[in-house]
Structure formats: structure tokens, C-alpha cells
Image (cartoon, rainbow, N blue to C red):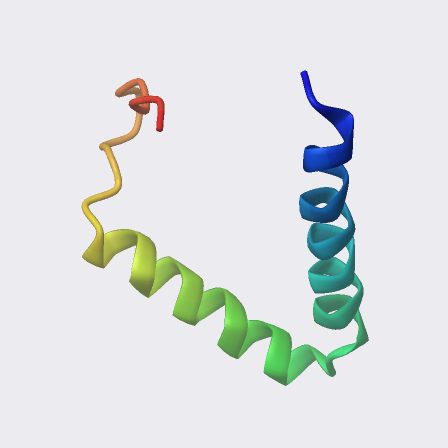
Length: 54
């Protein structure tokens, strides 16, 4: 595993989480609704169905 390659992705993920948590509750709800809509549009597997690896 190449930790030097993975670290920038981890740092970016933490930045996104921090930005999300700094949003007011109403904006967080909008982000969650948007993400759920994207998941449905991209054919998220049904509950209980194993997700395919990338």
C-alpha cells in the first residue's frame, strides 16, 4: 500500500467532512438530499445486495 499516494485522498476527505460539519443544519440536509439523489440516479444496489468493488 502506498501511503504517500493515499494520504492526499485522506486529507481531502477530512477537509470535506470538516466543511460539511461547519454547515448550518438546513444546508447539511440539502447536501444529504443531493447525495441520496445522486446515489439513486447511479443505480445504488438494493438493500441486502452486496456492492460491487470499484
